[in-house]
Image 1 (cartoon, each protein chain N blue to C red):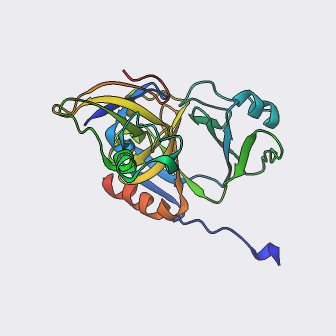
Image 2 (image 1 turned 60 degrees about the horizontal axis):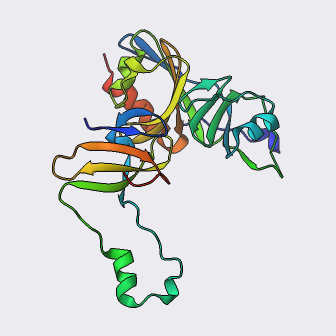
Image 3 (image 1 turned 180 degrees about the vertical axis):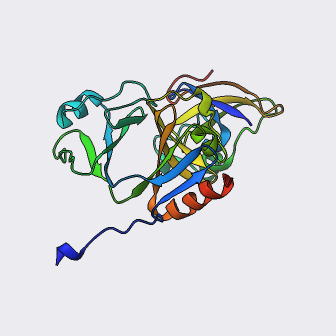
Length: 90
Length: 168
């Protein structure tokens, strides 16, 4: 069983309690109406999809309910670290 | 008129005996979902102490998350509405029912469907988790006594599942 450390509960919890939330640190444009179609498409759909270290959002939905960020290796599926939402990128 | 209204439990009555544990329905309780960015304001408003750590449970109130608490109180206890305060106090008594699993084999019986390591869960801890695919609130009241709070619509399934996977 894959255990994920929840930075709010400060415990390792089973993966089944969590939901994946896509790539992290994607800032919504301040004024979307000034974007052209290509920029808007980039914001909505284009993700980095790296091989290796990936910053991503997870939600401890069947636990404390909080979103947090994690660094996971997409090759080995190992979690390097997790940290609270709002903290700087690691 | 209103005298004829009563809440029917989705659980069958009586007790089921499992390996080293018994399964029974918890008495009717008052349940409140409490939310507050500032727990001190909430504590002052309801006049009760709130647990500091996420996962802790004291005085019938469990801390589920940074700003979320869940109160499991005797049915006659009522909390103020919190109107006007920077908090949310919602009576969700009818949303869930309680199942009590008690006995030396209680942790084992629950771990049949719950991925948490209950050997490491101390008495006095409470957390939201899952049993098979169903979300539950698990409270470890003592070493050998657990209360599971589950939404009504899942309750009869959960009861049969607990009884079934642990059938002696």
